[in-house]
Image (cartoon, rainbow, N blue to C red; front, side, top):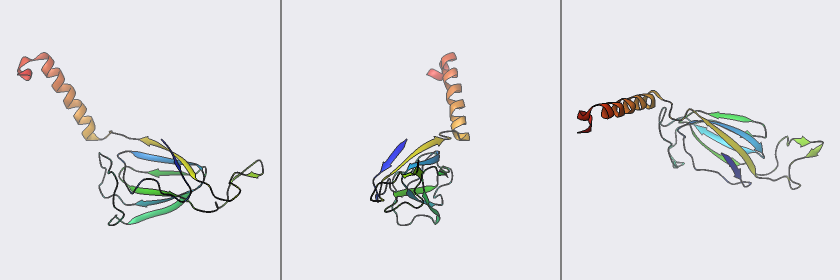
Length: 143
């Protein structure tokens, strides 16, 4: 997924994902806040969470182009495009890539891994397969 965030605005509300997430910052800067998990190894994403009452914040950092952030499944996070000038804005061929006014939005992509790869998911697949096979081969399972 790709996320373009206008300068000074926030993306999603605080939430956790049901997958491991790798964030790659491509353009601009984005300030990330990461909180401890409210639920250990959740099997579903949380939806939007209220900012009040979140578990303790464990990390706050600003990603710049080329930076990578790993968010394990269940860790609460949210981000905001950094406002104002970019620290150490990278230059391409000696020309600054930042807009003339020093302000720009933020672009990052996320790569997700480990979706539905828990022991419970494995067992569900085995049981479903076994029940389907039993129903196909024995009429008792179909009555």
